[in-house]
Image (cartoon, rainbow, N blue to C red; front, side, top):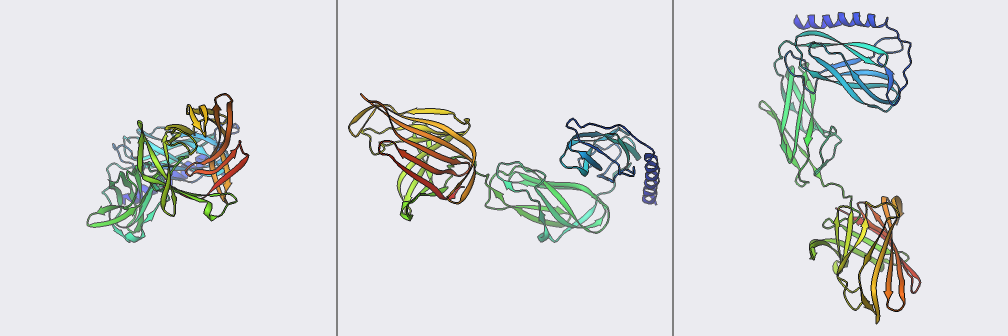
Length: 443
């Protein structure tokens, strides 16, 4: 009988409020100034549909699940801020942005603590429109729901991808099948595994088979394998589900993760002109810095090595030999790429005096310049985004002759991939060598 009286009262109040609202008229026109413009009413003057969600209990702080959904007919997109009046110690508020015209559902979250039970009428204003919404406050909390989990194999996972180190959001959900024995409120908390927990609150209104959605929180600590299993229980009933955690996507312009590998080929060459490079699990220290070893392999056998390190957006390469033409080894690093620098930024690396094929050199210099950033390039039929193009000019200062430009090179660096193209021009005996990446596997 109490439930019948409750809904009958709301029915009568709804009729009264609706009939009163039809008599309100507003003639002013609102300009947006970046704010959304619209109305809570239909063209006939009736308030558009609204929905009250969550539980409202006297003297109990309202939970995040206590919200109302209002329908707004938007004529101009933009930001909005909607707040109801305060009734019996609580109110509703919502802010955000609408990005399309027409009817939009806007959520308003409850705040405060109801100070009395019974039917409460809230006034919601949007633009020049005004609507009333009825919320019923229980004097005492209803008993908790009784339910069991069913068909665990039918668990539905939200679209969110779990990535190690990345905080989860509202897209990381699991939806479980339940059989409700006794209607009422429920709270489900699943303890954290690998840094991620799941929870959900709400109210089952009828005894039936239904579903409940739990939302993840936290950030996965370690990537799979293995998969990470969670167990949720209700009395003697339980259900288990598992999630897989991926490694974060590589965003380096010179990836240095173990086992990452590339194949590049001489443009115009044959299959024999293919170079295979793989990042070793080992590192090598020069001075105070540690460098990843990039092994150049022929049929699986390392034939040479290149040493790379990164510091934020700075990428360095260490030269520990004589490049095949110098009398003395260089044994020095140089900056290959500053991915934070702007277009036309330049830097210089000086390697000091040496001797090349009998010619004494007072200095060997590399001048670098960023030619382009954020490019989209198609190399060997593969399209790459976020490409940085750098030009390097190699100069030898010959004693008695001065600066002699020896070669000019351009490299294309793709984010998350590495070097996808290299073009070297020999300025002494004019010739150009171009190599392109034909296959990548980056971890």
